[in-house]
Image (cartoon, rainbow, N blue to C red; front, top):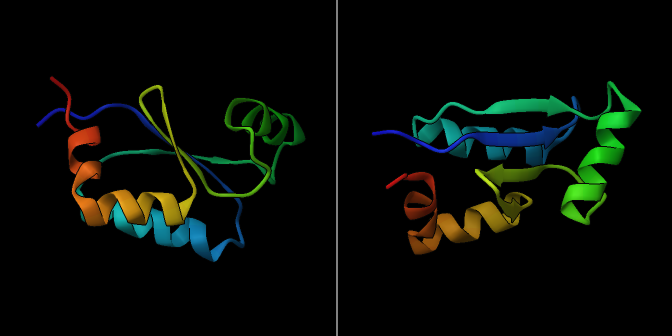
Amino acid sequence: MTYKAIKVYSTRLCGYCRAAERLLNSKGVTYEVIKVDEDPALYEHMKEISGRHTVPQIFIGDHHVGGFDDLSAINQTGELDKLLATN
């Protein structure tokens, strides 16, 4: 199965970020981790595109999922699998 590009905006010491990565790993998908604590410009970019200042911020394709709670919620409903799959 082919998947959309996934980006996880994260920091080194974020438990919710690790939880999001574990959930994505359980789906067998590849994702890019962008460490916003290593570059203030990346943090500013994340805030600009997400409208939020907390991590993680997760994007699947052009869709902003939100944080770990949002990711977990759509996983529970089955929507995450639909969002991950491409047509």
